[in-house]
Length: 262
Image 1 (cartoon, rainbow, N blue to C red):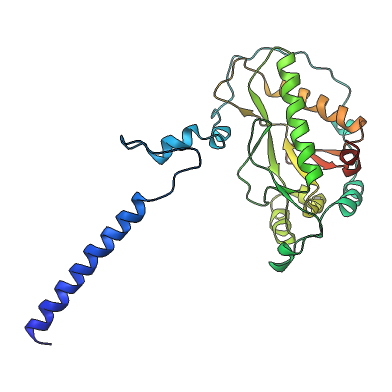
Image 2 (cartoon, rainbow, N blue to C red):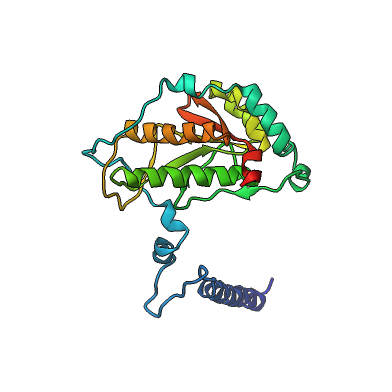
């Protein structure tokens, strides 16, 4: 290649680099902002916008539970294992009746027997980052989770306050996810009902402490309060419950008929 051609090629490459850089900058400048927000001339960052966004604010938590804690009145009704001992068979039978057909491949995701609703962190509850499940449930289960969260919050305020939310730790799983989980968690043997979209796990060892906590509460008291709410809903015929010990959570399956009556 002659010297002139080499110079021409180098110039062309440089020109294309400049053009590409300008296009990339143009794309960056035109990145759509979150709905309901506008960037100001002062250069408000995406991080700053998300900090005030109506969804992301429910993702903000304290890293540790605040102390010292204030004791709260809890009504104990017996051992949790005895109160919440519904067998996996009962959970499975309810799930088969009111849930989806287990997801097996990508095609099955588009051939659902029942509609699914997404659970996202909100004022009623906090959804943890899920590694073995996805945050989708049938509509009745979504209504149940919101009800648990609201009743928990209402009871908390009626007993002196405190800004805490329940934590969702597991939702909809597929067979592959359950197989992986079995290698780490013995409770996964009893968790196949999570394939049906009717069941969630709510932690009793961790609660979401919001930055605006006004009254510090202990884990034991929050666990006792949550157990009270779940026992009431169990007696009302709204859910089946199992108290898990290996992975500290309440394993909860919705009784769909109760939400059809409401």
